[in-house]
Structures are given as C-alpha cells and as structure tokens.
Image 1 (cartoon, rainbow, N blue to C red):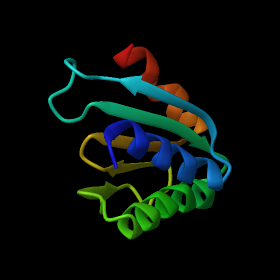
Image 2: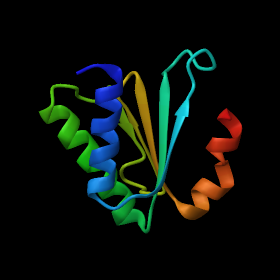
Image 3: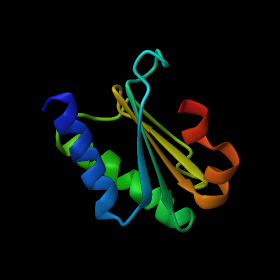
Image 4: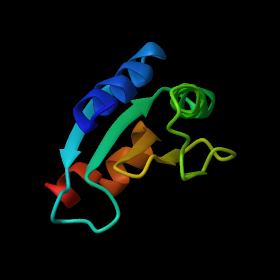
Length: 105
C-alpha cells in the first residue's frame, strides 16, 4: 500500500467510528517525525478511545502496526503514531485548546 492509499485507509477507519472534523495536515519538511498529521474529534472519552482503538486494530490487521499509542487511558487526546502518519483523536475542548491545525498550518 503506497502513502496515499495508506492515508485513505486510515481516514476510512477514522470515519467508520463517526469521528468529526477530520483534517489532513501535510507536515513534510516541517516535521522530522512524520509526513502527515490527521486530526479529528470524538464526542466523549469513550468515543475518542474507540476511534483510536479502531485505527490501531485495523492498521495491525493491514500489516502496519502503530509505532506507539499515547493517551488511551485518559481519552482526552489519543495519539496513534503510524510512522508516516500520526493520528490525533481529541475531544473538542482539548482540540480547541491546542489548535494543532493553526500550529502546523
């Protein structure tokens, strides 16, 4: 699976669990950690954790296990590091506070 196919696959898995406001941020040349950040919102701690858990499960099944997952227990902001893609699943108030889209735009 090439980079674009993998990104579409990950976005599809985020959408499967009804995440809101999915934003795709290209950070090539701006970040040494990743090429793409996907930021999305969940409605509650459980919803945020479930979206991230689905991404982890589905990418493992596809042969792309995450390098790390952080924040799963808290459910405010879960980060799933897939190498070339980093997924940020956040509750609205956390997303409003950190404003990753503005930071990386």
